[in-house]
Length: 129
Image 1: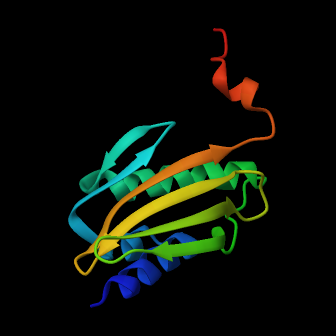
Image 2: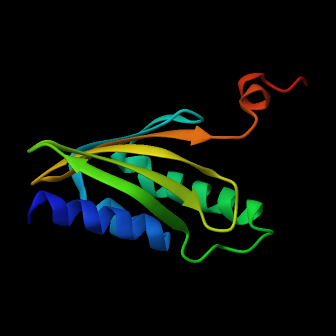
């Protein structure tokens, strides 16, 4: 399969909230970097996606958004490995950010996300316990 096809399958899995579909498009050494949880290895990806979906549903008043994710501003550049950048949001919520995805003919090599908030000070300072 060609690199761009792997990217399309991976993003479609996220759109639908289908962790298995996205995982199926990943290369053996795949990892996912999330600033809130750290590096997620391929073997832990499905659990991570399920937790992420639960958080999205909580923000959507307890209902699973459909589609789960929406993408805009997709930019793809380079040859193997290629890089894709996009803006993402959980449908019906304010949870959104950017993603940087590296991929080649073996599948998705990595994804690194960043979160966007309208109040960055609130997320940068840990809550007191």
